Every structure is written in structure tokens, then in C-alpha cells.
Image 1 (spheres, rainbow, N blue to C red):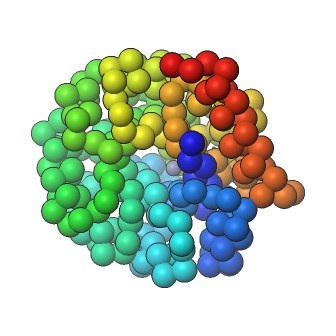
Image 2 (tube, rainbow, N blue to C red; image 1 turned 45 degrees about the vertical axis):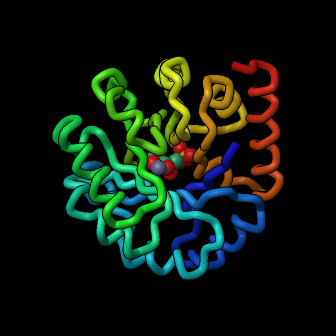
Length: 224
Ligand code: DX5
Ligand code: ZN
């Protein structure tokens, strides 16, 4: 079970300190939300900031790009030091478009490639790609902002991925907290992103520990 705090909810004026603080608190991956102001109605950070974070981070950078035309940006994020690079299905031209992006990620040596699905995007049209992916990110909110409410209906996609035998990571992102995170783990997710619930906690280490215990208990109670 991997806990991936989203730096979107960290203090952007002290990013390096926030990275060290959250790693010391037990973060497994650092989730970085890249938004371009087009694919989503918000604008956050880009390759220079990811490259700066890579210099200070010890944990893998889990870069979630909510951008149009992801193919154009693969090389820049590879050079910046992305360990996991997840692009959106809605931003490419079908399965063929996704294959081009995956191929570019392999060519540029990004260790892991993920495909993200918005809450209203069905899994079925993308299933033929599963063997080529290291991760599927099942969004449990519409991307763009932290602090939104979890949409439980997306859990069916997580269950279906595991029923299909998908062996890669299944990440969930959006609205995870002490109540919703066990549902994600029970459904088969193994990478849990949380922004506001972790960075908003009075004690981030305690919160990450609690989340890990909740997730592991949910899996133990319902082994699949
Ligand atoms: C939403 C981002 C999420 C967000 C999660 O567009 O992809 O990673 O930061 O934040 P919370 O956990 O606050 O919903
Ligand atoms: Zn994200």
C-alpha cells in the first residue's frame, strides 16, 4: 500500500521543506499535480518546478499531468525526473493516441507510465491498453482542485480492473480521507493520493500512519 501525499495542498512558498517534512512523515510517493489551465480550469506547476523538486526529493515523483497534448510534454518531464508519469485518457485521441504517449514515455526512459480516467470516463474502451500500462489512476473527483468530495461510483472501475487481472498499480485521487480511503483499498487500489486530508492534519505523520493502517485493515478484512 503506497500513500502519496499531493503537494497541491502543501505550502508552495516552502516546497523543499514540505517535501522533506512529508517524506519524514512516511510518504511513499510524492504526488505532483500539473495543470495547464486548458485541460482543467486551474494552473499549477510545470517542468522547471518538477526538476527542482527532483533535486531535493528522496521519494519517487508521481507526476499527474492534467494537460492537453501530453505527447508534446513527455520529454520535458522525463528530463525533469518524473518517476511515474500519468496522463489523461480524455486528453489523447483514443487508444492509438494513448499508445503514442506510452511509447514516448518508454523511449525517454520514464520508469512508470499511468493512464488517468475522469469520473465519467468508462474503463472499457481503454482495456486493451492494460498490458502496456504500469498504473491506472481512477479519479474520484473531477480534476482541477483539491478539497472536493469523493465520488463512490468510480469504485466499480477499480473492482473491474482487479477482476480483469490487472497487476499494475491502481491509484485513486480526490476526496480521500479516513472514511473514503478504506473503500478504495478494499476495492483494490494500492496507491492512495491525499492532499487536503494529509496537509491539513495537525500531525502529518500521525495522519499518514493512520491512513496506512486503515487501508491495510480494509484489505485484510476483505482479501480478494
Ligand atoms: C485534483 C488533484 C488531486 C488533489 C487531491 O485535481 O488531482 O491530486 O490534489 O486533493 P484532495 O485529497 O484534497 O482531494
Ligand atoms: Zn492528482
